[in-house]
Image (cartoon, rainbow, N blue to C red):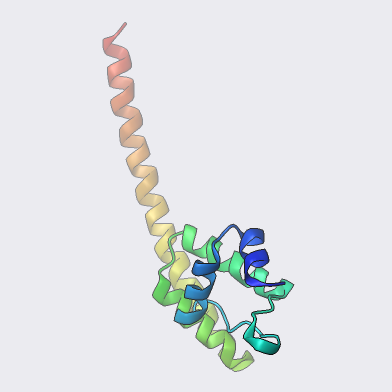
Length: 117
């Protein structure tokens, strides 16, 4: 499928997809005669993975490094795993901080609710 069709399927713009490819966030997409990008299902799955990881807060730098290692092949699987472990630990810390913030907000809200009785 062409870039417009792929962009529609993944909910991004063609400009964003070109940018992601240019900075190495997604592997290079195969091209048809004339240089037209020809997105395959595997490309769309990769884009969805990147979108998910970005929305979870993973850094662009980590994702670019992960993609670069992926392109290098199976010999890099341990390094890729380590990136994911590090990012998971970072997210777990943020998750805990958010939980603590929510608890503080709940206490403050309860305080205001008790004042209105």
